[in-house]
Length: 414
Image (cartoon, rainbow, N blue to C red; front, side, top):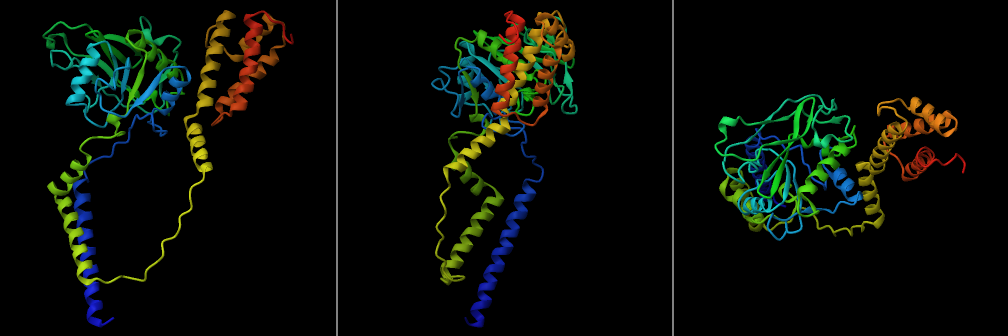
């Protein structure tokens, strides 16, 4: 290649490199102040903040739950009785706003959190004042709180819960309410304050969660969070006209969103970095067409290996292990079993395993060491990172045998 042609090619490559660096700088400067969204309460997500474990828990307990990856129109909400909208990333507005309001007034129950992108639950009926207020107090993760004494509808069989924050619901002052609306009903209150509240709207209601972290993959298996989740669902279904439970995924970024190409075109034609990308693309195409040279020898494309079905099986198994389904289910059954046996023997739910084993031995005539050993192996299994289906089944069989001895009067070994 002549010396002059080589210099021309180098000049073209240098120009493209400078334009690329300029585009990267402009994009980085434009988005320097933006913080990525780290909390996504999606039932498709197995990450710590996702709600896949909650969705699978509902499904395995026979709840007719499904995901909604389409807009909130009457057809998609026809069979829904309870709708979960947890920390949405896309604004609920326009037709979705109108359809949701009519659905709630017609007897639907909306379970939601209050965020900047979801400010409509107090506007479904007049007045348009904010009748709910949240007080945010961030604490270290994993601090348990305890149900407050007195009337607490969702506190049945709940001894302790874990939230990521101590955000509480504070009703607005009465002087700001210009029309008489149904009062706010406190459904769950713990030592940090009111966490779950409900307000009737027409024939339906809106249930506000101060903090939805107790439904996340990371927290639903801790303390009695799973019991609180089931109590919340049962309360919502008791008021709803239908039993169908729907998790909104459309406003979390899943599904088909109309106008995507229009949004992309708007970014390219209405912003500085977009015009820079278009200019860079046009300059590169014109330079390549004008020169008509190939940079390097042609390489025959390699034939890619098809992925085997075993890779899919391994991926599904990894997802199930991440969700911790066996460990979660066994933990719930074991805690329920201890409370039931303790009540049968006249002991408090917080009684030690050794005390329960001694009382069982007196009641059944069997050695207390046997019951102590069973409880110890259950505790050891729950302390492990994961429980296999075989281990869980074996331990549940032993617990069933103890239950038969304690409640049905069956003698050991018969």
